[in-house]
Amino acid sequence: MPLDLEAARRIVERGRRKAEEMRLKVAIAVVDEHGDLIALERMDGAIPVTPQIAWGKAAAAALFRRATGEFEQRIQVNPAFWTGISAMTGGRLLF
Image (spheres, rainbow, N blue to C red):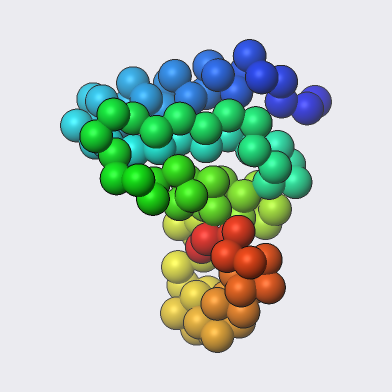
């Protein structure tokens, strides 16, 4: 079932609350299964680049259907491949 805007907003809100509990200033991106942006929020005090990072990580997770933390070992084995994937997408995907 596709994610609608209201559901995306609820996800952003839960993420913001969790970040506040952890005393973090972050951006939260919610994307569809193609990595296209549905909702994006940058918390007050988060550095300006955080929205691009959040979107890039969310897009990579959606397209590869796994958490970006799961890429760490693969990136260590073949960093050129993953850098190439990021470059091919104009930096849109962040692992």
